[in-house]
Image 1 (cartoon, rainbow, N blue to C red):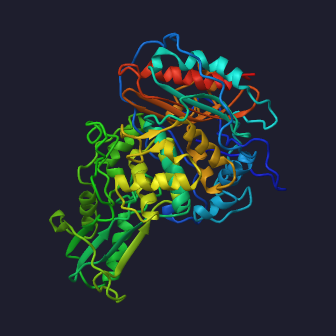
Image 2: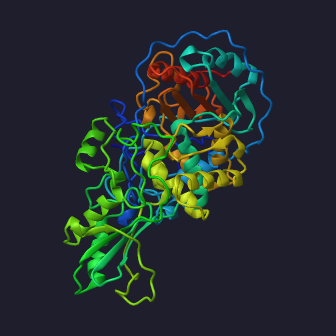
Length: 559
């Protein structure tokens, strides 16, 4: 399959008018959501830097509902005033700088190559047989296109946001990316249950706090007695046992075991101590629904785990390819990883216990606390991409804890939430409209306003923080990829196919979408729609109602 492609930066410096990364449209049927891919790493990249293909996130809870009902007679929102910030027209440049690749080549020019531990190469030097250039799936925005008017947007959206299928609380923000002008605001500043669109906040804050190139270490150190090995979890949720892991390119325990054996020399391993003390607090967030721990889409969050805590990786991979993205998770991911590590060292499961690594008194090889080996995760820019594209809840919680660690706070649910709030404020986002309990959006106590989301999306593209633009690479494309792969195909929503790029979020009774849309005139808008009082059996009708809103923006000039 042809990997995703982005338009190359102009060789003389000026950015082209299009700022939205394009995806390929190969001949033949549209690709299925299960067949998601990421461009491979460049030649010579380390094993831990190869590009992943991750699983899809949780399918929404709830049961199919009826058709979208007509709007009740609610009052129309007043025409909104301009938002807090005006955004310079540099989204195109930033997206190209951060996400650009030369055609389908494995090259990533600009800062991305450095973030991924690769060396940028001239276009055309990619290894392997050249593939034909893909055609664009996403519509290209035109910065000179006319701006929709607030009256025009209100006339188009008013009947749709009042649809009965969305329940009685529908909060919406729509803004022009180039100018920052608010075009539609209905409860825009009201904190609302966001579900998985929370991952946009998680992605932006971890990229700001850690940086795109950061890699999470998993270490092995000498235990207090000869032959004892302590495996120290650093919070890498993608860590694999061997080359058959769930996330291709992930760091591997068999590599770590090899390093340990070499470091120990003639000393035989006798015991494995699992140190997952980096994380604190409960392993499940108290605001999660009761079925989250056993439903296949969440897991106990521990500092050491392999394959996102999946119990049966081969089966999980097969199920993923067949479109079933749930997977049974182990109850104690740290101990399961420790037992896998023990097997690699030739030890039985009975030789594994929990504990903490001794402090290193000196650097002498084999001395208690001295390092015996280390492996490093995929760079965060790739983890964020998987998290957003596949709505991976376990990766999201790990990313949230990295924000906490970067800010010197406890790596717990509460510590991560406080740290993300702090970083959001540092970025100039309205932190008073943000109250988080986790990083995945599984908690029903999370609250985010639609306007914070549209501000965040615009900030990621305004050039002031180039590293934040990495969130755009993972946003699903309407009718093409991720959680939007099977959407925008009906008569009332097909205008959004290839024109909407957004993150979705769903819990029973909660439905949300936030992202970017290109209008019929080529104007780039950011939008967020959050609703948290949908009838429990209204899954399908709520999705269609949300898609109609975004498709309407895509299909009109709204002037």
